[in-house]
Image 1 (cartoon, rainbow, N blue to C red):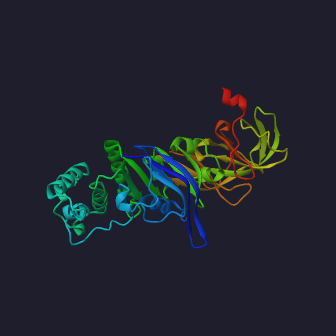
Image 2: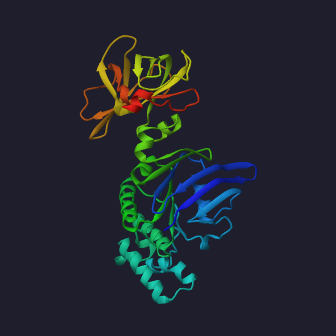
Length: 368
């Protein structure tokens, strides 16, 4: 096992700056997930760590040594790709042993490592099979086993579950989480699926346009997003956003006015904003309550989705073009066409300034 440290890491392809001054510390034995939309640079960052791409500028350290110029085989990393990339003419055993034999290890050592890895991944009964005889989840476990058999200091995963169906993704998420718990290895995992990030990570790194937007535990990113981008990306369904106008702020909280919600007293410190400033109010679907209402401030229900144990109610916004979402336990008494009032839980409302940065809680709230 080993730590990974990125110091002002940059990657430029031609005239395109992909990775921009990334600073990050991955602790020994930590499970870190890189998450973000397509094109944000998460896979490129992983390939820089693996040594599959050269670093334009900055330093990459594994343990305490700079590895910028080391080839992949000397970095002590194992990588699991999105595609299984198994040799179809080889058995499971042969696929897992191939890299070890290339390294000219003794046959006894190869056999010991393959069998030990097969036991961990519950592949012992499949060692004689060819990839075509395996399910998608079994093939992904073989791909993981091939990387693990080399006993790398760090395991890297590049969207390993994206080719699997929904139920198999849930199963493989559990298997990867259990694997990390058993091995205690340093793992870095790339995904665009924030559900994978929330369920697997000790620490999530949210990337946007080649820069780190926020780093923190799943709970921190969900409950205390630093920017509107993070607030909208983490969480499913996404956070509701509404325009708001600052009425006043006294350093112990603020009052804002939002279309359809009226005037709200919030615990955020908006003392750095001028009266009348345009803000964005954010509230998660589970922190909205519905009440029967009529009149111009009522919101119209445009769709109701029943998901078995919970219900999503979609409402026409008063401003903006994105539907608002209310989430509650099933059953629901609401139906399409009804007009309702929205009552947000003020303790869980988020405020963002014109630069989409979150406004922190007022001092009196922090002290409490």
